[in-house]
Amino acid sequence: MAGAKYFMALACHHDNLDCYDSRYHAWNSLRVGPKKDVVGIWEKAARGAGLKFGVSNHAAHAWHWYQPAYGYDPAGDRKGVRYDAFRLRKEDGKGQWWDGLDPQELYTGGHAVLPDGIDSIEAMNQWHDANNGQWIETGPKDDPAYVTRWLLRQTDLVAKYKPDLVYMDDHELPFGPVGLEAAADYYNRSIDWHGQIDVVLTGKQLKPYARFGMVQDVERGFADRLWDEPWQTDTCIGDWFYNEARLRDKSYKSAEEVIQRLADVVSKNGNLLLSIPQPGDGSIDSETEKVLDGMAAWMVHGGEAIFGSRPWRIYGEGPTRLIAGMQNEEKAKPFTAQDIRFTTNKGALYALFLGRAAGPTTIRSLAHGRVAGQIERVTLLGGGPLAFRQDDAGLRFDMPHGINFVPAVRIDGRGLV
Image (cartoon, rainbow, N blue to C red):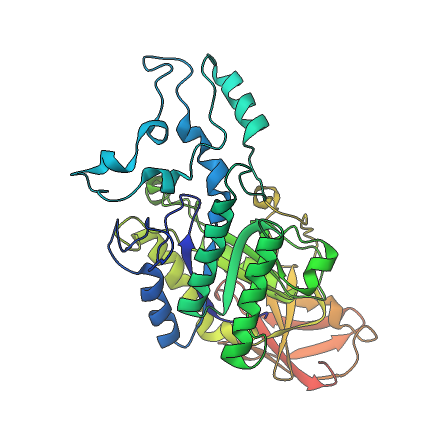
């Protein structure tokens, strides 16, 4: 899986809107919003570009995340006035943009409705934490049909678009045996499509037994070791939604930060899933363009160290230590020129320098006595051959000044890989 190229489309987020031609859910992007099959458009574009195609499903949590919509303000001018989900029904849509649609299907129904009489934000938050939670993998106890509809929507999504990867925004699988049924359906369909299970299903916080059947996703986080099994991290250059402030204050992740992350992840047998937020019209803003252009420029020469690559015997070297786990990007320290990551591809060894290496450079992991094999040639990708020597301290060469970020060198020789 490491080094594969694929594109992922969001099929349904926590707002419970299906962004595709959904057979079992009327609140979909052909009925409202753009009136288009968004997933279908991306699927054709991705496959036309020779990419693998994936979809993400976040809908399992919609039922409890929407329960505050049945509540009210505990203070202020509209204290106690119930929100739309509590009062709106299908008949209220007559003459509206949502005419013919049932708001209760979107909001999922009042499964944990806030009682009357709460009069402080603190008490309101405590009630929600106790009754509908932040992260629940079971369905609503009073509505088993919700879980059945989720399964129908998921199997319909897979049948229509034949995705190579399905991202589940869940800890392991949602809804117990029903989630397992969705996984079995996906894998059985893959056997029909490909003659074997040639697809990927991801989940978070997997227990050891689950890693035999799914790929672990580490959201906005890191690994601190080379994994035996494939894994993935997902992050965004900004927020998990389009935030115009990122454009104004130029606070997106830079192309350099993305490529640093990519090199680190791939060296540890992982994939990087990168989200590019877009405004409602689907465009790419000017600052995002700069990030994408910078990544594309690096890929012209550096891509051979990533795409189709495999990890080496060790993931790398250097002083920076990453904290393993989810949701910890803000704790990461900047990489240095001594932080190096290794990959292999078609018999060659690659060393990617996460910091801006320049001048005299040493790869300590390639010292005499520390590595088997004979180094015969060292080439800076995009820059040509480098004079080198190997001694007890490491592989030594001079890195040119003024080159692009995350310089990568190809190391050829017998017995290195």
